[in-house]
Image (cartoon, rainbow, N blue to C red; front, side):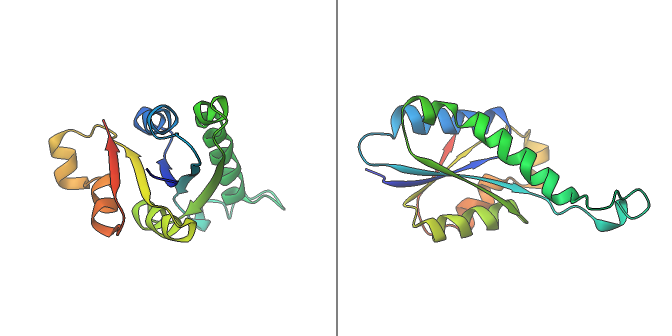
Length: 142
């Protein structure tokens, strides 16, 4: 059974399904979970004219992301499953795989966002890129 699981979260219903799946199906025994949310870096030029002194826009985004992930973690809390939250900035697939490596994960779980076939051709999907980059099993929840 898997003992160290990384769940990629992005606020979507697919990501919430992935967290629920881990809580319901993969939580036998001694399991630890890392919930990973990756945000995009904010362009600095947007804030130069309207910048409030001492305001850290990226910090605000990261705090909000952390709060959202904490809400999504409810199924883990309810089952008493230990978890930690990581909010990263960068490319989602690369950061999820990097965090999984650092966490010593033996499984990555991702939710499928439900792109239509045309969107998938042009945009690709984070889950596909994680599958390509990961050296450990990846479970995609539909």
